[in-house]
Length: 337
Image (cartoon, rainbow, N blue to C red):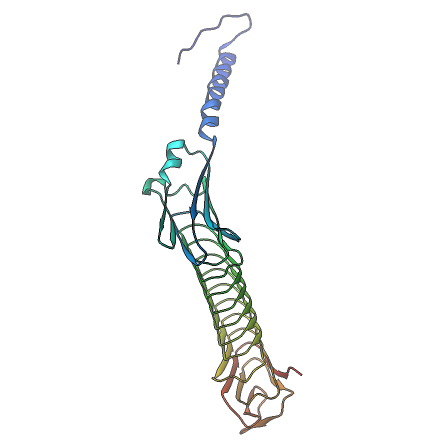
């Protein structure tokens, strides 16, 4: 950089210094604009398939969106966007596409040197496939969504939410940092999250839902339910099988409309419990409330001593055990009719 001496009336060393500083600052602008330029890249791949196939996706980063249509092909669109990456950097996140038999595979890999640029690099994988298909989706950093699908769903992400529409087959979904929603499943649902809520519509089969930091809501379960959370409320609007629900920090409500074939247990360390029963079910009841009373409007034949925070007895002659326990609230057992 060359500096030119300026001679003019009234020009002093202080003014010259200020001009030199301003010139140096403005000279940086083109470099910064170039470094922050926006890069947009799009990959498209299509495969001819028949309904009843399988999609497998495994990517080091990016959200995955699956939609269905009346089509005989799988169409994959990978959108890569970045502020601050070069064309060479974009090419380092490489995708491989393959079809073998009935299986279509999409693999996305990036080298170690590209890691740590998560805030500047955005990847979105959009897939359209036939309505009848099985999917197995895996991403190390992004959300996962699947529209209505006639097939099974297996999905896993290390950092994002998950949402599923009406799924005819079983759903097995796991995330380390986001909520999970499922509109409907005609089979079983096994859901795990370490940091979000779980919300389910109608599930015809069994439900196994675990979260370490959120609430669990189930509209309807056609079979047994296991629900676990360390920090939220559990609500099961209707269950036609046995239920095992526990939370360390919230209330529990359950609606049991059919005769359970196995023992049921509801437990909370920080809230109330409300159970609504079909009056014809046969149950043995053991309810304990350390922080409140136990109330019921059903004709329970009481065993032993009557206590304010304890109810033990039989409903309709007894049957599988219904165990209710809370350390921070009361218990209510009511008829649904």
